[in-house]
Amino acid sequence: MSRLEEILTANKEFVAHGKHDYTAEDIAASKLPKKKIAIFTCMDTRLTEILEPAMGIQRGDAKIIRTVGNYLTGEFDAVIRSLMVAIYELGVEEIFVVGHYECGMAKTTADSLAAAMRAHDVTEEDIAKVHGELETWADAFRDPVENVKDAVHKIAVNPYIPKNVKVHGLMIHPRTGKLDVIQTADGHTAETK
Image (cartoon, rainbow, N blue to C red; front, side):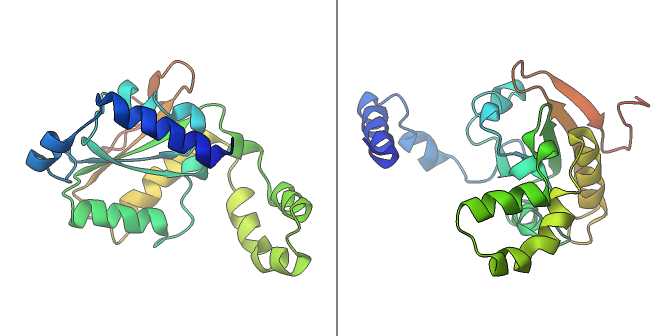
């Protein structure tokens, strides 16, 4: 059975049990996040089914944006654009940047990605086109805690993010769900708090 077939079989089971029908709720509910928050976090699979409960988040409470290593690549990258829509169109008032311990991105480099790309038949010409960006992005990420601090700062000073939107930085442990405050919107860091 292919992965697509597995997913479609699982979906039939999911729908058949009827425990997850939100039709009535969605008619009365809004697409706006109830808690008026956005969470910017990593795509790590270990965060599935642990992040939201660890933060007390339920369906409809928050807008969640996931990228590799919850890393920002620019002043107007896809994350910033998503946050802008969350703020300006959907009423988000606070942003939580949530990194996690044991992040694999800390071991990724431009060279390791280029080697893996070659192994998957990406041409040298195509690798050369993005190698500078790979160095800027992959080689810059070494410490998940420092990355959270950096992302909080970049979002807080971004000209497209209103200054009245609070930005916090947290770290989550991928096995226990324990959250550590790295930085609060008022500037306190784990070291000074």
